[in-house]
Image (cartoon, rainbow, N blue to C red; front, top):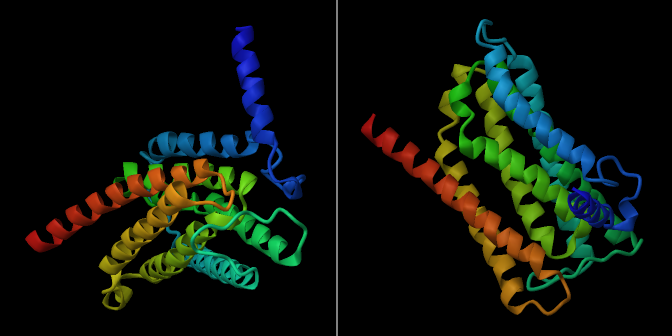
Length: 262
């Protein structure tokens, strides 16, 4: 028992030591807050549909439109900030270490990375809207895994490597989310918008292309990186991108077959 407590203390000590510039920022001093959000999210996934069993679906069209618009705008901001700070800092696409200084360009990347993490907390509301609208069939393993793992994975990256090589992952993901939440926002407006949503299938293709780019970029650093960026984080990106690619590809193939048969 004492050994277990010692190991837990060691893990928490490790996880509380990260980028010193983040000291005092919400969620960043300790893993406890983000793990609490993670557990509460899984509880919502488990208990939410049960709580809605005897209730009628809530009409949340207005809040959904505003929510998706807000996430789209936040994604635009993150994409812009990451791109500008990377260009200003002359980032290398081959291998780029993290700048932990207080240089304004480094702080700009830090802020963009932090808001990228915050966006992953906000996006958990996707599941909430499915639950209150009684759309449980859309709460798939892919949906839950994607939201839950991205929450923890992004926290880990921002805590220790907010910038550098991870710029590509956050930039591409935020860029894709601009179009995703634009689509969701239009779809939430009602059936009359369906004629403008012919490009839905291209969203999944864009996501798949994103995973190919992020995994290739990270794999290059694992194999050939010589700038001092920790290979552990790049290897983690490769593994997660590969998992996401397989899950999204399976979703795409099933949806494609279903559309052809119908």
